[in-house]
Every structure is written in structure tokens, then in C-alpha cells.
Length: 452
Image (cartoon, rainbow, N blue to C red):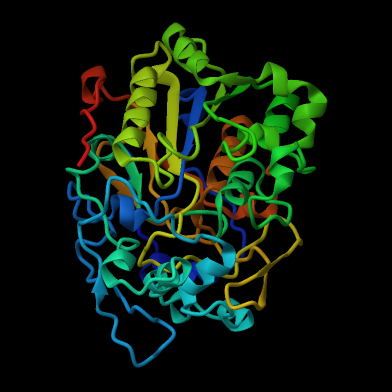
């Protein structure tokens, strides 16, 4: 059986500041590699753990908001102002005000300033500097409004009744409540870390992501070189003002190799392949972004739930279900609130830095040595336990983050670990069961989404 381990580092919080890379020790008695032959990764958009999953009730160990009185001040930079705007189960189906989630904006959310003392932060434990009290302030500045009710929307959260699809998935499989985005910033740098272990110094959604502009080696190239099949299924609407490229299209190699033609497929093909039992060894899914199925504001939550319900049910009812691990995660927090400080002083993907002008007109420099904010993540398979909540992993030097997926794939298929960040990240093969769950122990149909 899978065993949840709470390490000393988790109890003290000191593990987040330790950069040492430890070799992962596989504690599974049986050969877990023979159980999983197909991986499906779906990366949704822009929800923090607390906002999306912090109100779940099925397991009392979830580190969400039910046991925390989480409050922000309207002006967090004023030490004399009370933190009296508090999170409640009032999150909206449609978030009309898309929160700022640039790297400088996230600085304000974490540190209550755009310009933290990075050297001091790196030398300390995360919680000594990351107060997590600046979300309401940044929302007020971004939208030039100090309406307390409107600004509070950024820290409110959902209940199980709001998100019945995700709630059902979580309570039937393994939910991570300490899984962090790779970058405390926007979509494409995080998606680059998910698929290559670095953003190559990119800290915003710039033009390089639209023109096969990234030169680093990706998971897609790595799999091709190892003769491991993959497809990036995408429902993107690309072009000026229309959305984002599928993630495989970030990379120069994808265009040069011709896999942009052979291995990037429209989403309807995914449903056909799942039904036929012909999904590749590695499936990577891009949702539409950003108006109706990705959860990115102003996407309605119920439509995002409809999308993940369809993906889950296609996998669950596929002939490949018994050999599949489905990883559902979100690229980054999207500017929404969370109470857990992200780890600091961690290995970057490379030695490149990023410079950005903050809203106060001054530049900030970021070295990719801090993780982003927690995001909801679930492992879905008949080979994982039911209703488990995983906190800190068994790699004493690392943490769960998006590059944990790349490190896991390296352990699964013996492929290279692309960057120091990948090697540092915790993996999760210890969560596999010795015996597969019975077929009637995993729902074949999820609840219907709700609108409110």
C-alpha cells in the first residue's frame, strides 16, 4: 500500500531552503514501472490551491482555508493597516478581474513589496519573508480600485458544491496540497518549465513562445530520441489575440524535426484515440485559452469543469485505463491568493535571469531561484490510493512542483534529467499501490458541473 510520509523538513519548514539534491530512494516493493505504460498530462490555467481546492472537506488533513483565518490588508505595504479583508467561500463562477500574475506583481503578493531583499530571502526560510498578505493590495493597484468587496474576490475560495467534478476526482484519487508552480509568474514560463525544466530566462508571455523560439531541449525531443511515442493534443485558438500555442510549439526542435506536423493534433483526435486504446506513451493536452474551458479568467468555472470531466471520462473508459497515469494540474496561480509560502533558494533551470519593470516604475531582477505559488494537482490512476492527500515528498532536498513530472518521467523511462531543477524536484512513484484497485472503485462518470 502507499504510505504518506511527513518528514522532519515538513514539520520545521526548513526543507524549502535546502538546495542539496538528494538521490531518490524507491520504497515500492514491487516493480512500479511495469504498472504504468501511458502518461496523460493536462495543464489547466490560473488557479491557486487555496482558491480552487482550499475549501474541500473530504479529508481533514488538506492544508486549505477551512482551518485558517486568511486575511489581507487593503494596503499591505502600510504596517499600521489591519489585515481585515478575509477569505470566504464566495468565489465567483466568472472572475471578471483577471489578477496580475507577472513576476513583479507576485512579489507584491508574496512580500507586500515589489522589491524584496532577494539575498535575505535566499538566506532564510520562506515564511520569514513571504507574508502572503499582498494579494488584495496588488488587485487594488492593478484595477485602480480600493473597493474592498471587489478586491477581496482575489482571495475567496470555492466549496465542493461549486466544483463537484474536481471534488469527485480529488476524493477518489491523490491530491497534492504542496505542489508549487515552477515560476512565480505567468503562463508560458511555467509551461516551459513543465516541458523542458527551464524557461530559458523568459519571465513573461513574450513573442518567443509564438514562433518556435526556445532553443533548449524539451521533453518532446527527449522522448523522440528515446523512441517513446508522444502527442501534444491541443484545443488552442492561436494567433494575435486568440490565445496560446500548444506547448510543444515553443521549441525550435519541434519545427526543425517536423513533429509540429506529425505530433501536434487537434483535441478531437484525443477522444478518438482514447476510445480506441491507441493513446501514445506520453499524452500532453493543451486546453483552449482563455475564455471558456481553461479556468483562466474570464472562463466560467463550470465550463472548465465540463472540460476536465470529458478528459477524465475518456481516459477512465479507455481500454488503456489500467496502464495509465493521468496528471491534472494548473500552470500557475493566476494571481489568486494562497496562504503557504513557496520554497526559496532552490536550483534554477539554468543561469539566466529576467528583468522586469514593476508597477512602481523600478526594475526587478529574478534568478528563477524561488518556486511559484501552490496549484491544485491530482494523480489519477487505478494504481493510486483513494482520497489520499500528499504533502511533502520523500526527496528530502526537493519539493513537488511542475518539474516533478519531468523527474518522474526520467525515473519511469530512464531518460535524461534535463536541468538541475528537474533533478532537484520530488517524484511520486512511492504513491503507487502494490495491487490495482478494482474496476468499480473508480467512477466511470463524474458529477455534472454547476453554474451559479
